[in-house]
Length: 158
Image 1: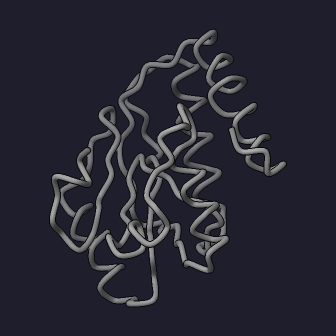
Image 2 (image 1 turned 30 degrees about the vertical axis):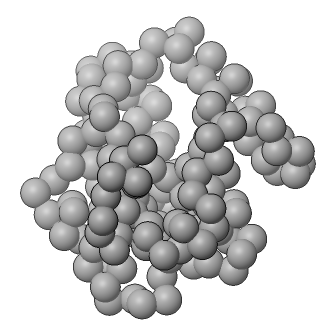
Image 3 (image 1 turned 120 degrees about the vertical axis):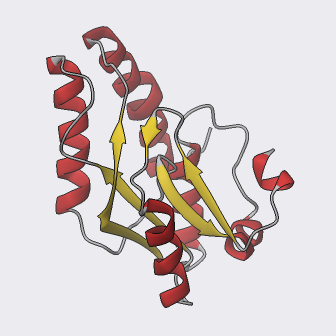
């Protein structure tokens, strides 16, 4: 709905439980302006999680580590802090609303399958405010990520 109500050249996505830095949006846009052939870009959580609990610390620092040690040329997309060129988003058909979880990752797979370029920018980092619980982490890892991602990898879709 937000995409339909917007009019800009770039579509920026930020999760509700994320705090951006003062330069985050300008950095995201600058990457897309500087690289006309780049279709999408995303960042990662920073290394200072907001919630002090050990599960929250673990989850956020794991995310930070994985994204910071990954290649810049990404195979998928993340809407926690990312942007897509509107023309690329529309050309690929936007988000598939049938996906309850992993809609951003699924979008990234379709983009890459269509030959589009996605970059993970290590310099773009945001603060994650989520308070994780152990049970919530297990539920998310199994039902929100593990099973849907396996289906994506196996090409089974929904």
